[in-house]
Length: 79
Image (cartoon, rainbow, N blue to C red; front, side, top):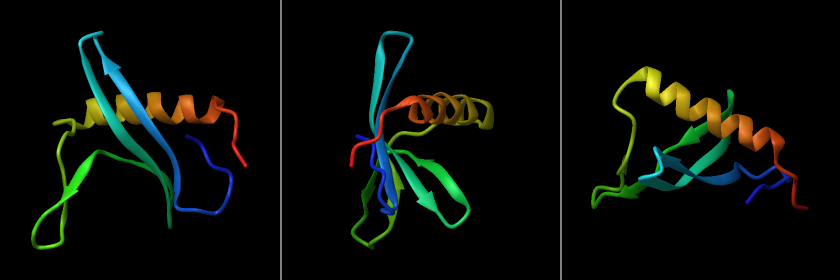
């Protein structure tokens, strides 16, 4: 899903790693400093959101971010 409007949620992505592991519901969010990705999360009883899957190092996070943002840039936009 890709949106063109001014909504904060711009897209939802899935990635497949090494043809054996899939991560769904990675969100592309339009924040105050521009676009960023948000890994799948759930709300705790205290009202906080905690990632339920995430990379454990900066190199992997950047690799995922770059792949998702590059694919987002190439997607047609829905009105």
